[in-house]
Length: 415
Image (cartoon, rainbow, N blue to C red; front, top):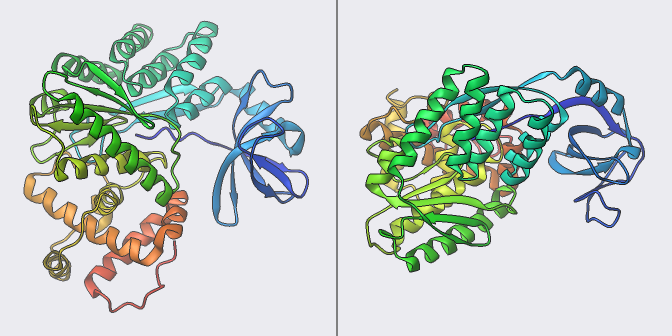
């Protein structure tokens, strides 16, 4: 689920060796020294600081860095002030999960005040309570349909459906929106079907589960698996690892009724990890793999909108799935015979695929991800995820490599 909102403004660093820090205080950890003239992407300003301070994004030597800079070290801040005064429109979308039937696809337009941009960035970072604090204050100042809808998204992502519905209904009272209305219907359906009422917390996980169907010991094991996977995947891909991921464990019947999942879906991520379990069952290798798969989706979602094949291929690869030799041969034969669609055709949602189509799509995505990981390694993957505009070209090269299967010299793919 992506909320990718950045202002690309003409702001830069004034002096050499300016420290980009992990916080606004002078003793915060230095992430990197910045050369004079380094372009700065302003995310939002922080109120309550003795010295004006901004959350920023920096691209430095091929790496993407997030951190904080005081206003005094930057040139061009008047551009940011002007943009705030003009309050340009920005759009937020709640996109569907990549391996389940869409739960929601909501287009929300919010007038781009500093508070709205700040809230969207907090949602990006899974800091939903903080986003709601910002939005509630902004709503009191200027109640608008878009702000209520954005607050609804934050509440839903934070696993508070009742509060989310209240925000969405208020938004609809102020302005008709068919997509928000569709979200309301989906949430109401989910609330009726979902009996998950118990909660446990891990280092990175807030788990809600059906205590009548899932033993507490199983729930604890689930937390441990997700915590461990998120640390490993975060280290490999470079995604943030400091916010709790909401996870919902429920029976298969409740899972399918809640989100309308396809027959082949074994789990889903729609801003929250969803894992179906057999009543009374404990953890096994398959359930551990499912949890690791969805935790990878949670990590990848922090990079914004990525193609479904990349999501699914890496989720399989990083959850321990391998490409059997027969599968690789079969995919090569399919591709050479023109029976496999190019990866670009597997970029959208997979909810409309039948079981056979889904099996082929997953296999192809895993083969592509396997080639990607072997070719790039961890550093290359992180670079590619930070520069998604390169993915279409990489997809074309992967298609060719699958057909040629080793005929192309290594090193031709540049992340």
